Image: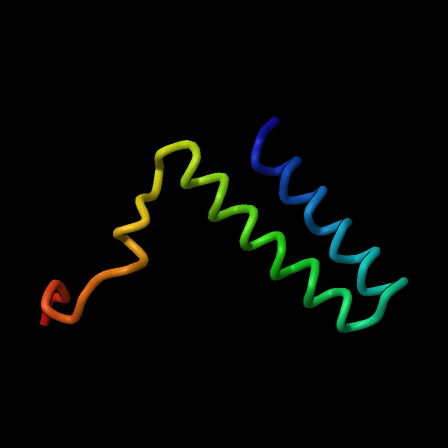
Length: 61
């Protein structure tokens, strides 16, 4: 499945949630979609947990 199709399905899900459930449902679906995206990237190996959790000493100035 290409990224355009995934984007269309995600947009339709957000549209349905916003129309039938209101703004709260829209925000909930968007947040859960973002969490699912990050988990999917972690499982594929594209992102590592260390990218999200760095100590202050590791930051570049």
